[in-house]
Image (cartoon, rainbow, N blue to C red; front, side, top):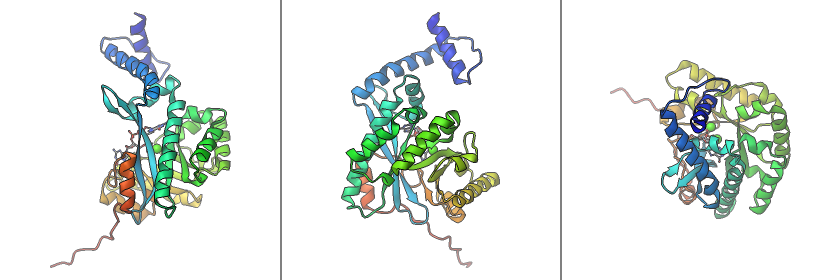
Length: 303
Ligand code: C2E
Ligand code: CA
Ligand code: CA
């Protein structure tokens, strides 16, 4: 009975806390899955089941790769490769996001060092790592970051930390302090999923950010929804007045890319260029230099 009540409680929490859910048997399956995920997560770290894939972030005008975003995956012995959406929240509840996050940071810094050295430092390549609220609230997170930079002999500007705007909202004071300390180290900071949460323009004034990542939900509609196009264009202009660069997320076709270039977006990322890839494949991609180049749309001559 307690187990079933627990399942109903999790659903209530999922649907937004402070509410009541009545148990029914379909919740049992979900509860079992959660339990299994939870047990597995504890083992996964020591069993080295986490993998890091990397998605290129490219300069919009030239298709040149400027950064790689590290995205964690769980190589589950029975369930195969699991996307972070299925375990990050659970990991957070269990308090294991910090060690997973540290593993991602370490792996990503090591990968960047290899790519940089192979490139003989010719390119201004950086790596972008997603940071959870819990990591940012750790008392000495800046020291963890500093340790990683030293361990992998990386210049601080080559590391960009991505933080979602909701993280900034929830623990504004502690987060602001942490971000300022990180900034003093010289690492770069970006606001992830910009526009998708409780966006407050005052972040731009209060927090020292280098990059705004425009949420995929606006990029998807950029060619056929006037409102989305207006939002994206306004965010790009606003960012530029703060001397902040913009990355458009989730670019899937040439039309979206052309629209973004027209609006002056600095960088783009999405399946149109590449899916997230294992580090060996990134190395191969880097030797080919460019992904896709936007060509100006030349009108066809009328016959
Ligand atoms: P995110 O940081 O917004 O990462 C972008 C997500 O969009 C990735 O999903 C990526 O595979 C997907 N994506 C990229 N381009 C396209 C596109 O053109 N179309 C579509 N439909 N999707 C695209 P993924 O890898 O499943 O990651 C989901 C989220 O999990 C991430 O969203 C991030 O918030 C979180 N996450 C991933 N790795 C980490 C990590 O190491 N630590 C933490 N704290 N969170 C992570
Ligand atoms: Ca991100
Ligand atoms: Ca994002």
